[in-house]
Amino acid sequence: MKPAPFQYYAPKTIAEAVALLARLAPEDGRVLAGGQSLVPTMAFRLARPRHLVDINGVAELARLAVEDGKLCIGACVRHAAFHHPVVQGPLGKLLSEIVQHIAHHPIRTRGTFCGSIAHADPASEWCLVAAALDAEMAARSARGTRIIPAREFFAGIMTTALQEDELLTEVRLPLLAPDTRFGFYEFNRRAGDFAIAMALISYRLKNSVMVEPRLALGGAEAVSRRLAQVERLLEGRAPTAETFAAAAEAAAKAADPLDDENISADYRRGLVRTVVQRALERATS
Ligand SMILES: Cc1cc2nc3c(=O)[nH]c(=O)nc-3n(C[C@H](O)[C@H](O)[C@H](O)COP(=O)(O)OP(=O)(O)OC[C@H]3O[C@@H](n4cnc5c(N)ncnc54)[C@H](O)[C@@H]3O)c2cc1C
Image (cartoon, rainbow, N blue to C red; front, side, top):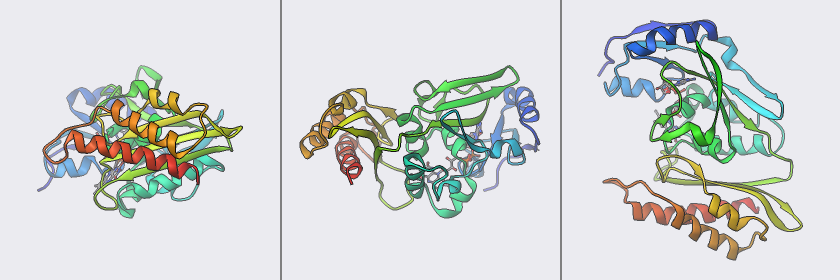
């Protein structure tokens, strides 16, 4: 099937893009980034935007830079940019490891980091990273720019705090201290499929105990989020099998899993236990 008819716009600057969105968003105008989520839904006519504001020609949005201790990822930076570490240290390694789990190579060459965040699929790996690391989202509109913290940004399945006329211009991730350890584990049926459950842990090891733990869960719930009660359990404890098992159990209890005709909440809860345990085990290696 072909998409329903739409008007196409190709701004060259952020100012032009937000001016177009101010005018067209109320008439069902949408941003087109990599098109890897939007275009298939248009082809199936599940989405019928009347106007598409294509941001791919906005050179300012291709920015990938470190500023004030943060990695700033512009709206046109593709998933594939992370195939190799974009910064030295654990953050670069973490992103280059996780990107391998996103779809397949051709999709990664078009799809964008910010597009994933704006789309807010519960199974998006970048949404999990954003939640775990307390990312900041820069949202620009004709009214100006506002910074939205990750915990306020993700509001539900494919629902965010972005207003219809706001352009997500960049996402900022804090650089990680050089001694940060991280572990990621994702469960899906086939490589490249969306995650049914995944977990990301990071912590620092001081005097043989874990400090500053961050544990986030994705895929299993409507929104990726940090599990504060599990982090409290890890803080100040040695990274032992016993602690990991207790943390995995606590995560399974704390989870509020999605339930649908294909995958039950009970099955997902069991997966939460497994992915948390395995992410923790990976962080020690
Ligand atoms: C077969 C297949 C498998 C996939 N597997 C995975 C996977 O395993 N993990 C995963 O995370 N993703 C997966 N994806 C989705 C892919 O990562 C998309 O690239 C991503 O979700 C959206 O990014 P995009 O740049 O393509 O956005 P688009 O498709 O262009 O846009 C998606 C939505 O976000 C909005 N939007 C985009 N950018 C902005 C912005 N800067 N500001 C405001 N709104 C914006 C658009 O208006 C639209 O509503 C898969 C896609 C396909 C087709």
